[in-house]
Image 1 (cartoon, one colour):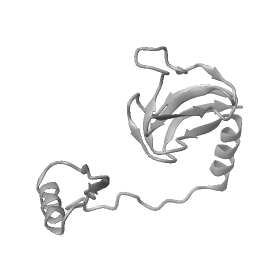
Image 2 (cartoon, one colour; image 1 turned 90 degrees about the vertical axis):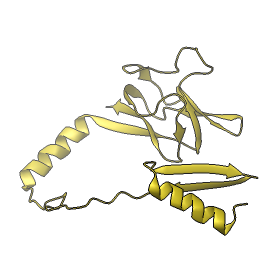
Image 3 (cartoon, helix red, strand yellow; image 1 turned 120 degrees about the horizontal axis):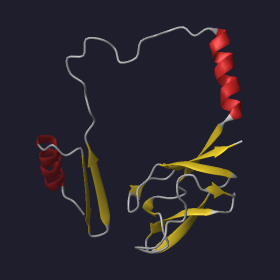
Image 4 (cartoon, one colour; image 1 turned 90 degrees about the horizontal axis):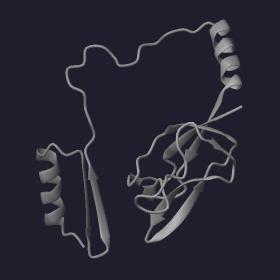
Length: 147
């Protein structure tokens, strides 16, 4: 367990460093500290308001229905792996056709491996997570193009 003094010291260290995130574990207690990014001296807003004509919106909706993208999300928090074991062939690659039951990766949680399935029929067009990445629940892992 962390004491108040230790927490204050860790916050000070993080504040003075170039790190954006600090994760520690002590006696079964996990602590995650993160900085928020603040933009200084910003003269113009990042987003400007604009108007869109109904014709453009309708055309974009038609295009989207022709090519539909499905995000495969992480079912749990853990470590993502692209293959069954180190050095093995990845479960899927970009351009590969998949079925709903195709295993596209695994997420390790406390030495248990949870298979991640494609959930849809289509083609892998982008792999959003890297092998060995620590991932969050609901984090997008793959983009699948469906028709």
